[in-house]
Image (cartoon, rainbow, N blue to C red; front, side, top):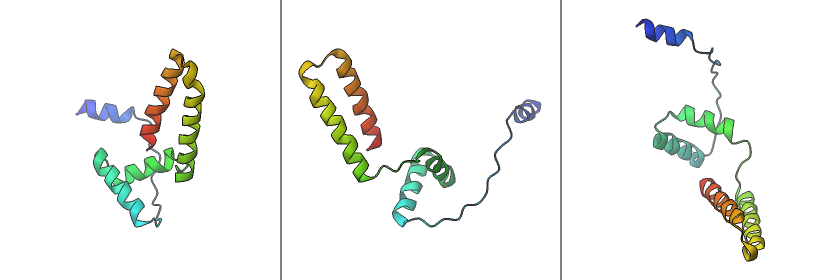
Length: 100
């Protein structure tokens, strides 16, 4: 038991939690709930993560612009496709799949 108490004493102080009542569309609530369940975390944890890590909303217009920019760059590089360009394209493709 002393190990447990010792570990707790070495933790940095927690940032206090405060309630944040907010109304969101049902579809967003459902999405947050599903993501939390898929990750095995609480709804609040998923919501806090989103608030902290999603400062720029991925709107359909932004995703469209990103996809077009990626495709244009690929087409520009395709004729002389050096190994470096292939690696960059593959990295961008992986990132894009995460965003979808």
